[in-house]
Length: 351
Ligand SMILES: Cc1ncc(C[n+]2csc(CCOP(=O)(O)OP(=O)(O)O)c2C)c(N)n1
Image 1 (spheres, rainbow, N blue to C red):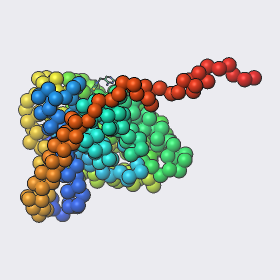
Image 2 (cartoon, helix red, strand yellow; image 1 turned 180 degrees about the horizontal axis):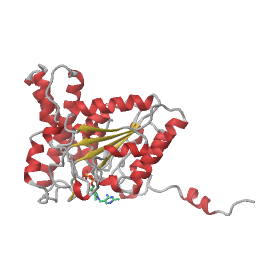
Image 3 (spheres, rainbow, N blue to C red; image 1 turned 180 degrees about the vertical axis):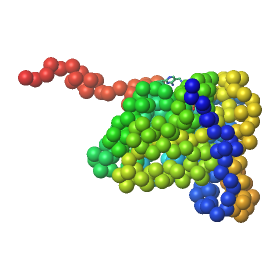
Image 4 (spheres, helix red, strand yellow; image 1 turned 120 degrees about the horizontal axis):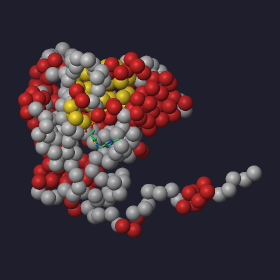
């Protein structure tokens, strides 16, 4: 029987606060995006309780350091494939708070124009491949982006996220196998938040770590403290530089904790309270705030960022709530291929 040494406990994963290695400009940028992501999701929870939000609500509160830190390490022309806990990556790559709110409210004025909703947002023109519900089926697509970049010499790196649960699927392993084989310019980020819905890690896999699987596919497997945004940024940046230089893919396991239920309807009664409390004490935004204060960034500057984020969210909510619903007449627009294209496929082949 394999002895499980993971999940990483907060104390084990913690990086000591230090002034020496802190890039204040990067730290402030991370702080701004993480704060914006948190402010939007806090507001969504309030709106849900007030009956102002249709449909479901899934958030990534407490995990913001991973999507924000990772997306910030990408260049503008790189591609990101966010999932349901990765609002921060969408924001960094250019989805506005108002577009996101409009998506949650099923309104027009965002990339899917009300045909898809909530976290299913993205815009390929901005290098964001929208979420596919089946997990992690955006990974084989990300692999395709990587292969295309190599063959067409595009110099683009593609980064895809998934949770620990998604690593048990066939698509996940097939993707990594081909990625290692063809040395594609991909960054594969696992957000190990210790639970896949109600299933804890001990009931998911026997390996010592998920990062250790990188060796099986011929790529580096790296573990990082996923609540330390600066550490996530640094690890992903190094992997992006390596991929762009032709050094192939990297598998990154970022340790964090899902400190809430899977979604708003789930009270997570199956998670030990002490485990949640332990990780809540290492909230990634508070950790970064403390690091910035230690580096002599003053309190008012950080509070100004917090206030600006709150104003952005309030303005976005006002605009999104006032926006119209989609016109049902346009329901099929950009959903199906034109009829001619489909019927052409059925024509008998010419001799
Ligand atoms: C192939 C597949 N099976 C089941 C689901 C239903 N489902 C949605 S989220 C989820 C939990 C996924 O856990 P994990 O990958 O660890 O991500 P987390 O939600 O913890 O961030 C499940 C089972 C799905 N979307 N796709």
